[in-house]
Length: 394
Image 1 (cartoon, helix red, strand yellow):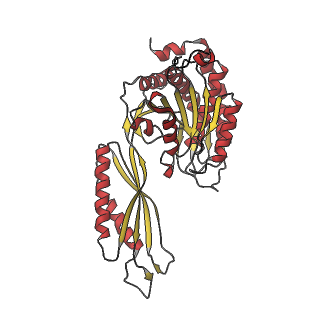
Image 2 (cartoon, one colour; image 1 turned 90 degrees about the vertical axis):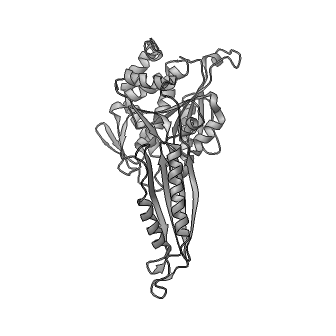
Image 3 (tube, rainbow, N blue to C red; image 1 turned 30 degrees about the vertical axis):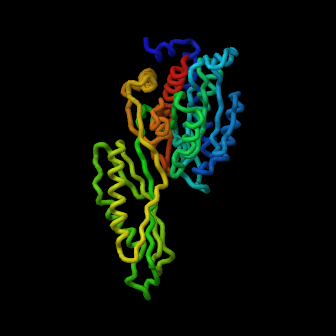
């Protein structure tokens, strides 16, 4: 009998699993409460304070915040509770969900409910994920599901945008390679990620003399150069397999409608499932930048502003297998294995044991019309509980 099925036959676990259906309204309310606290990347302090209060109310031990506003709380191992000698329990399990969102301060966070769906910016990514780890902690404690390993619950910052996974980098520095990492996303139900996409991000800056649109007509414009550079980028042909992509996500520059721009810049996102393919794409972009930098009276610079390292663990790693079996157990017979860019990139890039799973289905992530479908929330929580217990040696 596999470990997941054995755990699921435990009477206390059965009661906990059965209880998730009745908790959907409570989880939905908690998700909205989290979503209503603005948390742009680098501005997560207010949401972190709310999460810390929730950890403390649940009775977690060693509840703290670090200087980045990562929030930590622990359910101690059964060996610690029994006052057994240190070093006799398995290595810790770290359950994390990122607390930041892509939406800037001042975004209208109004929520609308429509049957089983909840609409609102950041509702699925990742308010539901944070609500999920809080609900998981509450469930483990309420049903006294004592495990041989410490279970740490972490709401980490800096997953989105230019956060460059800084929160998870700090988490992994703290717990190291002996921990097992389970990363929780509010959406992505039915998907299992044990491989991380490599992502490199750059700011490309163009500078020219500029001038007056009439009096200096003919002078080189930084905006016009940047436009030609974007066109050249768009002519690149990265491989389809391994999947490799580029995207210009932000452009800035200029002073006024009647000014020949002296400065213009873009933010460029480069991704690939394969490190070598990503390196080739970066080299192609560098060659374009060097080509444009040779134009008369033009300066072009390229600065790295983000580096999410690629990595992965084999599909036959026990943690990945437990995630798959748990997903099948809760009614998803065909799990979808994906390569993605999540907080799991950091431990995976170091060869540490990590996996990313989702709680329910959501859509329109990173858009104002984002929505969360609660239909699979009980199943997603059940998968997460079973996976956590298996990883913690229940």
